Every structure is written in structure tokens, then in C-alpha cells.
View 1 (cartoon, protein in one colour):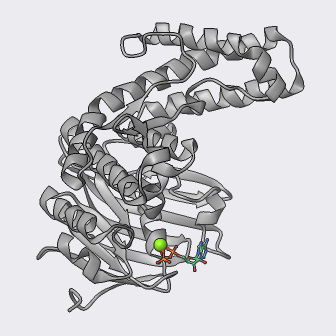
View 2: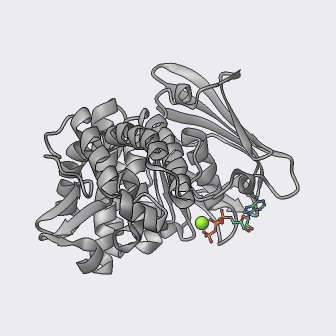
Length: 373
Ligand SMILES: Nc1ncnc2c1ncn2[C@@H]1O[C@H](COP(=O)(O)OP(=O)(O)OP(=O)(O)O)[C@@H](O)[C@H]1O
Ligand SMILES: [Mg+2]
């Protein structure tokens, strides 16, 4: 997959953007607050229909404008496709080759993207929710069907929590328990499958990034009385249902559901100890870097092609050694990558003869005169 051309209109502070990225590295250079992250956010949104950081879709529309549009021309499996998303009145509308796409799932015809931001670098020591997002983005990239399961799950979860708060009778809750157990089991199984593929790759990457022997990336759902490694989806659902019912009294008191994939964590360990509590700042960053590289390698192995990579100002957050490693990895991987930076010298290692250097200034993207000297 290759992004051949990107066109934006009124996306955040980017009024009008139209450029053709390099098949390899494209570097977007600009000072703070000019629109670099906004540009990556637009590409991420185009590829996933999910916001990279915005809480609400309206935030993505340029102040004072009625709508925003992001369109990309992709080379996908030998064909050229025009994929576009419009945001208007807080809603989004997606099309492929000019035809509206009804079910979001139909949209993901082989477009995959891995984003890497400074926020990611903090997840090892952050809240469980951040690690869940890291994990679930990887699951979704690898298994697009995960999106439907997680949407169905969240809807059932919200309803159950409402009933818990309202003190509804057990009979009312039971219908939701079954729905949660059934979709929850599928979510848990997809996370397990992703970890089986990704953990060995991330662990191998750790070894070349940092001297961290005995690192483990694991996932084990909490409170399930089941042999997790071996259980099939129906057994997982049965275990989840039993846990929901066993914890009903507690859940009623607290007014929310305390067991299920929404409450689980990605378990990263150094020599058997949770990295969240024990890793140093630099080790924690190396662990995320290794996760991302594992994810890229895994997608490449599974899909037979590299995902599109978006790196938002990551170099300034890494120590020189890790940054050099990352830049060398990018330049050898052959992947298409869009990198932003305030300081071009930090990303020079990823650049080659076909690198496009662009300047982002006050919401405009302009060709730079050449690699900064
Ligand atoms: N909906 C919007 N309409 C217009 N401007 C917006 C909108 N949303 C954000 N902005 C503006 O975009 C600018 C920030 O852009 P962005 O986050 O892409 O900066 P950046 O180039 O990544 O900067 P930094 O180097 O600090 O990360 C801010 O000036 C912000 O006010
Ligand atoms: Mg930024």
C-alpha cells in the first residue's frame, strides 16, 4: 500500500493542503503550533476513521468552517483507490472511489497505519486505559473485525452500567451479561491472538534497542477462572459470564461493571516485575519503541506489506542512541513514513535520496528548498 497523494480541506488549522508523499520518507518540518500533528492526525483519520487525539469530531473542522475533508489516493493491491472522509455537523461520511461506504467495516480495504507519538512513549508508566488503547490499536490493525466486536461490547457495557446505577433487577441485567460475555470473549481472544504474534517480535526488538534481558509483553484477562492460554471462545464466554454474575453484588454497590476486557491491562514486565512500577523512564520508552517495531514487523509478515507509518515528533523524545536506532530501522525497512519534527537534523538518519522535505507553516504545507544543510 502506498499513499500517492493527500488532499485536505479545512481540517483543523489546515485550510488547503495538496501534496504527493514520497514512497519512502516524507519529512514535515515546522515550528511549534504550525499544523504538523494536525496533518498526521488527518492521515490517521483517513486510514482508520478514528481520531488520533480529538475527543469529538467537531474539533477536527477548521474554526468557522462548516465541514472538513480528507482525501487520499492509494495504490492498493495493484489498483488505485481514492478514499475520502468528510466531517460535517459532528458526523463523518466516508467514500471509496466516490461511492459512499455504509458499514465502516467495508471501508478498510487493506489500508493500515501505525502511528507513533510522544504520548505513546508515556504509556508504559501511564494508566491501564492508555495501555489498552495501545493494545487495541494493534489488534484493530491486525484484525479489522475487532472494531465491530468492540463497538457492540461498549454499547452493552454502557447499558449494563446504567442499569447498575439505577438498581435494576437481576433479570434485566442478565440479558446484558450474556451479550457482554459473548462479545467480550471474542475481544479477549483477539487480543490473545495478537499478543501471540506480536510479543515475540517486540521482545526481539527490545534486545536490539536496549540491553533489557527477560522482557515480557503479556495479556491475561483479570478474574477469569479458565485456562486462558488454551480456552476456546465459548469457554471464555462462560468464564466471563460466571465472573460477571459472581461480582454482581460489588458491581451494584459501585455502579459499574468491574470485570471484562474494558478493565484489563497490557502486562509489560522486566525480569518478572511490572514495568509500570519498576522501569526507568528510558527503559519505558524503549519498551514502547520495541512494541511499535514489533507491530510494524508483525503487520508486514501477516499482510505481506508494510503499513503506513506516522511518526509525530518522536525523535525529540528519544535519547540519541534510541533515535539513531529508530532512524536506521526506518531507512532500512523500506516502509512509507511521514515524520514530523521541529529539528530536521534529528530525522536525517531516516532520509534518503527520494525523501520529500516539506515545511509546515501556519496551516500551509510547502516544499522545502531541499534537505536542510
Ligand atoms: N479546529 C481547528 N481549527 C483551526 N485551528 C485549529 C483547530 N484545531 C487546532 N487548531 C490549531 O492548530 C494548531 C496546532 O497544530 P498542531 O498541533 O498540528 O501543531 P504542531 O505543528 O504539531 O506543533 P508542535 O510542534 O507544538 O507539536 C494550534 O494553533 C491550534 O490552535
Ligand atoms: Mg505536534
